[in-house]
Amino acid sequence: MLAQNYPVIRAECECLIHSQLRLPEMEELTSFTSGGIHQIA
Image (cartoon, rainbow, N blue to C red):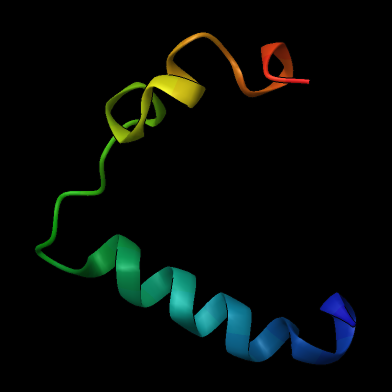
């Protein structure tokens, strides 16, 4: 599935990287990610 959609996924990632938007760090998203995603389980 990833291999089939690689061109689209890459284009979307490159668009995000080159945009003027600031992507939040994982710690900023929610309290669930601040301690590490694997600590939830």
